[in-house]
Structures are given as C-alpha cells and as structure tokens.
Image 1 (cartoon, rainbow, N blue to C red):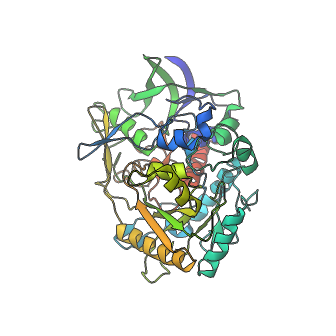
Image 2: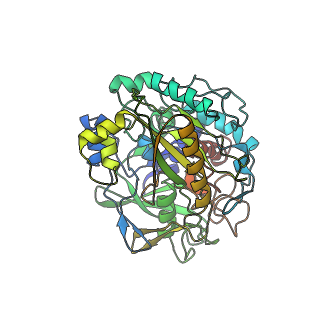
Image 3: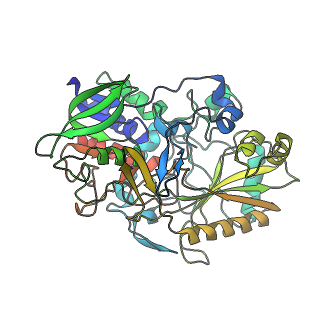
Length: 500
C-alpha cells in the first residue's frame, strides 16, 4: 500500500476540490487522485481557431451510444476538471427546484432537503468561488443569508443596450452570478471566457478557488496522472480498503480510512460499476440498482439573435440572463427554463459550429451583428436514462424528457427577441455530445432501496464511501449546477471529517 491517507478524493473538479477545501482545516491527511495534469498556458489558450475548429484541448476518449455509434463527449481531464472550461455561471437552484412539481411532460420528484437547509452552504460556496452578482434584479432569486461579496461583472456598452431592449420587451434581465475576475481575465487576452481554458487567475474555477485553498494546508496533496480503475473492499463488502489506479503505465494502490468519488456524473458511475465484486455483484454501492440510472443532462439550445443595425462590439458578452419563464407563471402553466448569454461568438467560433461549410468572411460578417444565447430546460430523471460499462467502455443511453417545455421556451424566447428588435433569430438544439451539465447517476435520498447516497453524500451500502459530485443531484433543475455541486460537497465535508 503506497501513500496511506485518512481520506482519498478521486477527482479534482468542482465536487472533489470543494470537498478538499471543506476538509483541509481538519488536519486529516487528504490525497486527491486526478487522472489529468495541470493545464499549462500556451498560445492556444486564447486562440479561437485552435480551441473551436481544431479541438486542441479535446479529449480523444470516446463513449458509445446505445445505437452502437461512438462519439467524443465534452469532457476535459485536467486539474480542476471541466470547470477549467466552464462558463463560470454560479446560479443557486431556485427554491421551487427543491419541491416536487409538475412539468409539461412528467414530474420532478423534488429533493430530500429544502432550499433553506442548503442556503448556508451556498454562502460558503459563493465565498470560495468569489462569485460576482446581485440579488435585486431576478424575481426568481431565492433569499440569501449573505449578499454577494463582489458586484456583478459589468455589462459592456453593447450588452447594456441589449439589457435595455429586453426590459422594454417585457422581461426582467438580471446580472449573471459569475466566478470571474474580469480584470485578471482580460489582462491575459481580450476574449470571452465561456469554453476558453483558464490558464491564470481570471476564472475562479475549481483549481483557482477551492483546490488552491486546500493545497495551502500541509495535510492536503494531489497526485496527477492517476487514473483510478476500481475500488476494492474488504471481505464483508462494507468498507473500501484501497483505490487501484494506473500512473505512468504502472498499476498502484492507495489505502485510506475513507474514500470520496468525485470524477463527474458519468465517470463516477462508471467507476462504481467497474468496482463490482462478489459482495457487490452489480457494482459498488449499488444494491438499489440505481448507480448509473437517472442520468440527466439538461435540454439546451443555442440561439443566435442578429440585428444588422446594431454591431456587437462586446469582447466577453456573458453578463446577463433572465428567468421570466423559469416557473409556471406563464401561459403554458408549466416551468420552462433559463435564458442566458453565451460568451462572445466570434466568426471563427461560428464557423466551427456552422451547420454547413461556410467561408470565414461570411461567418465574420454574421458574427459582427450576432448575440449568442443559451437556453436551458429541466431534464427529468428516468431510470432508463443511464450509464453502463460494457467491455470496459462507457455506454450512454440518454432518454430525453420534457422536450415540449424546451420547445415552448424556445418559442417564448424567440418572441421576446423579436419584440426586442432582433429581426433574425436562429437556433440549434444540442444533443448527447454536450455533457457539461451531466448529473444524477448516484442520487441522494433517505431510502436505500431507491437512492445511492444519504443526505451527507455517504453510500447507503459502503460505510466509508462518499460521492460528492453532480452524480448525487436528485434533479437537474434548469440552471447551471456548479454552485449546487460545490455547496453539497462543502456540506459533506462536515460529515466526513466528523466535525473536526
């Protein structure tokens, strides 16, 4: 057994890093295993051709669909995980998201805890991610115990104009809660941050925020390039005794008192399923047969609004959104979802995502007058929407739900944009390759027969196993899950450390 520890955390993304941050002051020996390496700065880091057209940072790992077709998912493997490329939007789930409620095509089961119970942990997550925001503009914003410590990232002049146009069109645009130090970001280069890698301090991602704070303690360390293949238990199956990982082509083992899996909703489920044994024949901690099930990924659409009379002079763009159709108070009578700006879409980005081959002069001209939006609707949990492992390959069967609500959101938003003076509105709905909001594969609950972990994110079946990433989310809601994952992981740290 190498490098014995009190706690081993698998994954350094938002869930793993936030857990390490929560545990660091306890004095417990914490080792983080991360399959990727540190993301180093390079000319490609702010090169939209390298990133979006050439896929410079894209992983070569392929997953399979149940149709037998392989695809490249939107997963990144670096210290900090997917957050190195995230849009840095740190919404709280709305209070209504924690209660069971009807949707246009099904129902959301709600959470076993209330918003009020999670709210203090949201405060802590916002603090470590240095979230910039305001609580006064959005009618769906739930109550905060503490105000944001930083004011919102400022609108650029072109976006300030769009904000005014939206308000005149009858919606309530609000500043996005963002984990972005805009001055630090722009010092490196004048680009947006959405889908660009963070190689400095501009985005407060999992590495820059909670992980850096955790690693400042001498009892916390990280081992990079360590791909965990399975977790071994004792003869009883009640306790994990070692994590088995491969580093530099050599298989190694690390022992600990407790283990936390935070590799992302797909990879965490795959790891638990690969760790099956005589005592756990269907996968580790899977007596409920729920590991890998209830995969959710949001229904999302990119919308491009174009006004040939109003050039978009913004650099980063992504500062406003609106939630007027988030709850059921619309003519449909059902929750529809969230609308927020994308990062500034350049001609090169547009060319990389254009549905047909297009010359650069055309996409550059189009991008000059275009504003990109990201529309998100809730994906409801389904036992048949699942992750499985077949011949050591990840196989995904994503069963879309609630698409009528998403189509209604698109229609409502298109009407708003035209009323706001955008004569051209184009849309593209994303498919299974967009896995940035993956969640739900080891959901939290009080009943061991229907859930995988308890309210402290501890396995019902294995006494020293925790899951602290988006796997545990009972519902996807319709906003970015990053802050909720961080809040739950920080909360779990209190239980895992035994109050130390």
